[in-house]
Image 1 (tube, rainbow, N blue to C red):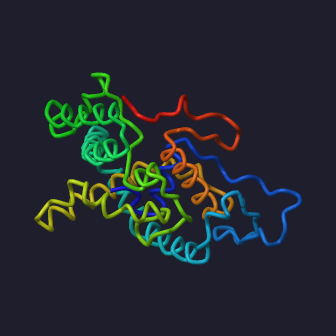
Image 2 (cartoon, rainbow, N blue to C red):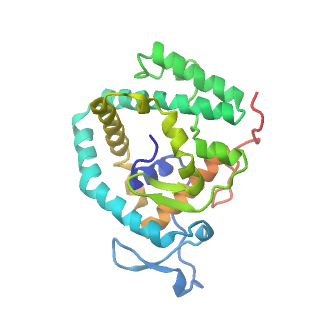
Length: 268
């Protein structure tokens, strides 16, 4: 389950270290680039580097406001309570458990993208952590040299097959996406083991724990995004992170630094 709220996804891309803060306003910025900061009420100049990929901005901003209110009044308070109650070993175990479940989707998309080496790594991680790691509570695969990858989803697979990512698209409750990533979500749900839990109470409990735990991990990190137009920050950060994942790190950040090494094609 990836990106279940706007704030959650925004902070995930920050943790991914593939995004920078919005650019400073330039001296020649026109009034058309000026938006109102919902937090301070002051006018700020938006970064237009991704404007061509935000064709639904009016709709996106409305959904953004809804998701932020949901987070402020529901998810964030619950996440704070969870963080206060759960000991650190419990948090780590929960994180490992859900990370292990995501390996199934990773393996499926690795194969569809012809990344056989990565498919072997992710399969090994799932088998080892599920067995020796007690259902994934312990990441023993990492100690065996099988490192956790950035992750794959069907939207990334479609991009590898040549489908353009399309415009930025915000989803109620689910948060930032693109048109192509949204189109791939049914396959992502199909490859998510939690989707096959038949007991509704158990299924919703597992999903709820995942959402609350993920949100709790971001309580400190979100402080990095203070100031400016938070909508612009989330949009630019998400799109940069998305490009990083789709291109397997073959992108250049705002400061001109290379993220990756040699381009991976047929991964044997």
